[in-house]
Amino acid sequence: MKILLLGSGGREHAFAQHLSKSPNCERLYIAPGNGGTGVCGENVALGVEDFPAIASFCLAQGIDMVVPASEAPLVAGIYDYFLADERLSSIAVIGPSKAAAQLEGSKAFAKAFMERNAIPTAGYREFTVAELAEGKRYLEGQQLPIVLKADGLAAGKGVVICASVEEAKQEMEEMLASAKFGAAGSKVVVEDFLKGIECSVFVLTDGENYRLLPTAKDYKRIGEGDTGLNTGGMGAVSPVPFADEKFMEIVNRTIIKPTIEGLRKEGLVYKGFIYFGLMKVGDTPYVIEYNCRMGDPETEAVLPRITSDLVTEFEKVAAGSLETKPLEVCAEGAVTIVLASKGYPEHFEKEKLISVGSIPAGGFVFHAGTKLSDGNLLSSGGRVMMVTSLDKDLREALRKSNALAQVVDFENKYYRRDIGVDLGIGEG
Ligand code: AMP
Ligand code: GLY
Image 1: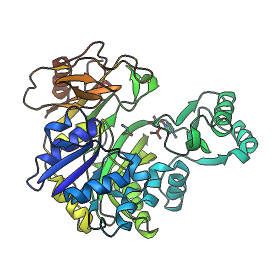
Image 2: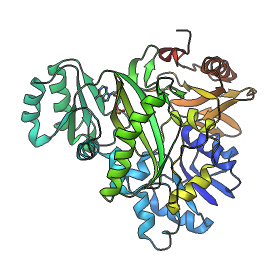
Image 3: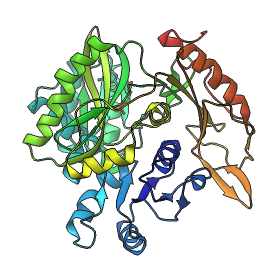
C-alpha cells in the first residue's frame, strides 16, 4: 500500500509512526507533516484542503489510500471528491462522506441526528440571526450555567459556558449578529449544562461494523486544576479508569450502536473513525460532541497501545469487511503530556530551538508544532511536542512521562503537571 496521510500535528506523527511500521505499508507520504514526521515517511508540501493538488499527487505517485487525520478535509468533502472522479474512485479515503462529516461540522445537525436516533445528549434549541429576539427570550427561562455553541467548525473555540443570562444574551448576540465566529456562528445551539466527568470513546467503522479503540481522557484547559482558556488539549490518559466494563456496556448499547445504526439507516456513508466526546453524569453517559476523526492529543496516548495493524484494518474499512471485536491492545496504559509554547493558546512564541535527548524504552516523543530549518529543529506552533509513556501502572506511566518532559527542551516550555490527578493516578 502506498499511503498519503493528511495533517501536521502530534496526532499525525503518531499515525505516521504506527502506519510506517506496518508490513503492508510500502510507502508513506505525509502532507504537509512536521519536523518529526519526515522520519516515518516523506513530507510533501500540500495543503490538506487543496483537493486538486492532493488528487494530482495521488495519481502521480500511485497512492492506494488517503488517511485524512484532521476534520477540515473531511468536513470539506474529500471523501466525495475522490468518489466522484473515476480516476480517483478506487483510492480508499478513510473517513466519512461530506454528509456524515456534519456530525462534527454542524452541531445542529449532530443534535438533530441524536434526537432522531434517541441517543442521550443534553436538551437543546437552535437559533438563527432572524430568531435572535426569540433566542434571548428562551435564555431567560434557562437554568445556569448556559452552554452556547456556534454551529460550525470554530477551531475548538465555538463553545461558551455562560454563568449568567446577561452573559449568554451578549454571547448569542455576538455569535449571531456580529459573526464572532464567522459563518460557523450563523446558527447557535443552546444546550443544557451537564455536570459530570468527561471521557472520549473512539471507534473505527466501515459503516456496518465497528471496532472499539481504547478510551482516553483529554485535559482541555491550559491551566492546572482545569483552569484558564480552552486549548486543543494539554494531555491525555488511556485507558480511563472509570470507563469500566459496565460503563462501556451502556456506552455501546445506548450510544455507539444507535449511532452506527442511525448512519446506516439514514444513508450517511461512513468509513473511518468516530470520536464520541462523552459526559458521565452519575452512571449515565451523554454525548457532548461527535468528531469525525481521532482526537489530538488522545491519539498520542491511544495509538502506542494498539497492536492491531491499522493498515490492514483500513483496508477492511474500505472493503466493508471489518470485524466487530475491539482492536487489539497491549496490557500497558499510556499517559501523554503536551509541551506548549509560552503564550499558548493565545499569541505564542515560535522559532525556539528544540533539543531532544535520549528517549527511554516505552517512551515516545511526538512532534506537533515543529519544523526543520537548516538542520535545526525549531518550534512553529502552540503545541510543540507530546511525550507519551507506557506502563502497566498508570501512576508509573505518569512518572515516566514527567521525566520524559525533561528530555525535550526549548525556551519557556510550558506543560501541565497535574495530568491524571483527577483520575487518582497523580500526586496532586
Ligand atoms: P466541545 O467543543 O463540544 O467539545 O465542547 C468543549 C467543552 O465544553 C467540552 O469538552 C465540555 O467540557 C464543555 N461542554 C460542552 N457541552 C457541554 C454541556 N452540555 N454541558 C457541560 N459542559 C459542556
Ligand atoms: N482533544 C480534543 C479533540 O481532538 O477534539
